[in-house]
Amino acid sequence: MINVPRGTQDLLPGETEKWQYVEEKFKALCHTYNYHEIRTPIFEHTELFQRGVGDTTDIVQKEMYTFTDRGERSLTLRPEGTASVVRSFVQHKLFGHPTQPTKLFYIGPMFRYERPQQGRMRQFVQFGVEALGSADPAIDAEVIGLAMNLYRSLGLKSLKLVINSLGDVESRNNHRHALVEHFKPHIHEFCSDCQIRLEKNPLRILDCKKDKDHPAMQTAPSILDYLNDESQAYFAQVKSYLDHMGIDYVVDKNLVRGLDYYNHTAFEIMSDADGFGAITTLSGGGRYNGLVEDLGGPETPGIGFALSVERLLMALDAEKIDLPIDQALDGYVVAMGDNAVKKAVEIVYNLRQAGIQVDKDYQGKKFKAQFKAADRLKAKFVIVLGEDELAKQVVSVKDMTTGDQQEIPIASIATEMKQLIQGGKA
Image (cartoon, rainbow, N blue to C red; front, top):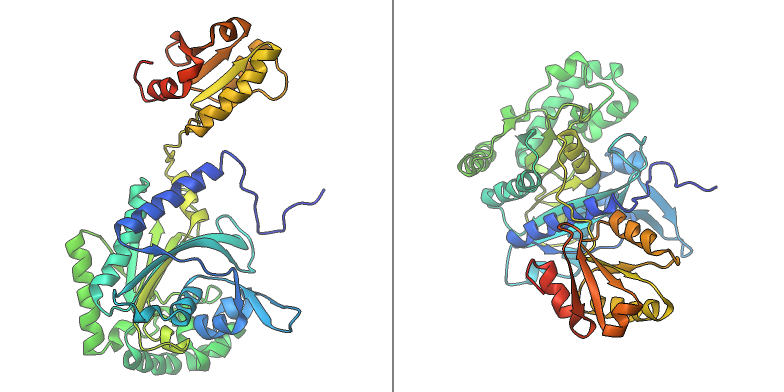
């Protein structure tokens, strides 16, 4: 027997319906916010993620699935969505469209080689949005609001929004220098990764999971103390918009996010639900002014977020939220007798052509067993066709909720079944 690779999973009927439900919820919400879907390749040139995500990040250094193809090109299964979206934005010159900002969303599998655990798989599915072309703090609040709205629309209540500002280039450079000076005397006590990060990207030290409890972490300089006037004003506007929208938040000076391209607004949404697990983050994102230029495009500000579908479903389970998924069939055709069985094939085909969800027996079951199958499939109506009904050119339709039964002509079965399903009389 061959099993799925470690860190991947099969989604079986009964579970896929939950995924379909939240996917449709996300698409509908993005439509409300005027975001449009973009689909990018599952693999890209490795250089895209080295430049876009950052070669000092754990993703690039340790977690990417990279391979060389037959043309000796280095390709990588995408570990996240933003770099691919921005690459497409630049390649197809979407910055030249008259309507700006360009507001996009995506849904798709991502791949990271990390230790599998609950809610963290090596293949996982992300929802994400990207808004490119606006430096207005209001769109930061819009993106955060969209993410919060999705969780709330699914019934989640134990949510915590954490925000921070990483400042502009000047603020980050000043903070970077302060971090180097702060950590340098203690860096030999930190992990090897942090020792490399000290000069390359000291901000990454604050995101280290191994050394998070080191005393020097608790006293590290806060980026908020190094924000220049412009960055402070920008962050204040974002918070003001969130206040006006009635969205509660907590400012966390240590929130830096795991990717190099972030600046100004950074945020994470967490679950406070009992039993959700030690890793509480549901989603995160932020502003990435400069990424478009890094990937060969014109100066274009951007902001976005991504969330894991796996962790979203975990949060729903933790809060014991059952999604309103209707898995019942509209109808099930029960046929007895050779001629009736043949006619049933035609009836089923015609009902499906009319958009009615029906099924029938394909295993030669007896009459009672067919009714049991209809019951297991939660059929709303059972359509009975025997030799007597066939002779009269009718079917007997039983409402499985009320037990009511009536005959309707085969010639008008599609029209009359639609009326029954919609709650009217045939």
